[in-house]
Length: 256
Image (cartoon, rainbow, N blue to C red; front, side, top):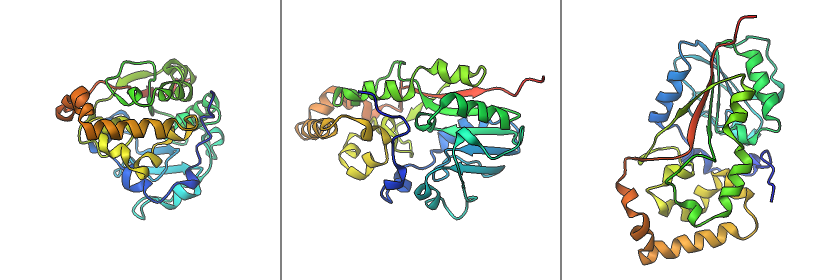
């Protein structure tokens, strides 16, 4: 099984996506810290605008028409386009951000090279390290998810090398995280029973036929019987867990 990382069609999403995938303040604080004192920021794969700083000049670029249409009227409109061919001059921005998007790119190396070309300062990539340890339990219900995520994200070193070197920062995901990506729901397993929640998490679309249905049926049964709480219930009280979420931060461009 080799899913296409760029094969998820955001233009087919239902309108629930903006209601579930929103800015989490704790994560936003860590992301914005890595942007340093940048006054101009490029956001690629910008989606609906989550995590865009309000105290800087932001230029957003997003390939999906539906995602662009879902952006708040309080945000700048996003430009239609892809990271692999950015319509900007060299060194046009003080910093750049690419959040939970690199696994959708058609060409990771070309996309990172383009970010480096147009960015003078730091490049902040939020992504997952699929090879890192995690306390998240979802793979126990959908074991196919591990192979899907390993292929979509690939080794973390690939992103580091594509940026010409970078620092890796581990991120904590808290129990009350507002952004409903998968691991953010580690203490809210009932949320996975909702179709609209899973529709806002792209990994499900890459699973082999029947895997999602089997996993969700088993999870529903374990929640009803109390088996999930017997095995994982302590996580409901945990303020955060060990997970695979990372920031990959490329430093300022070296002078030639």
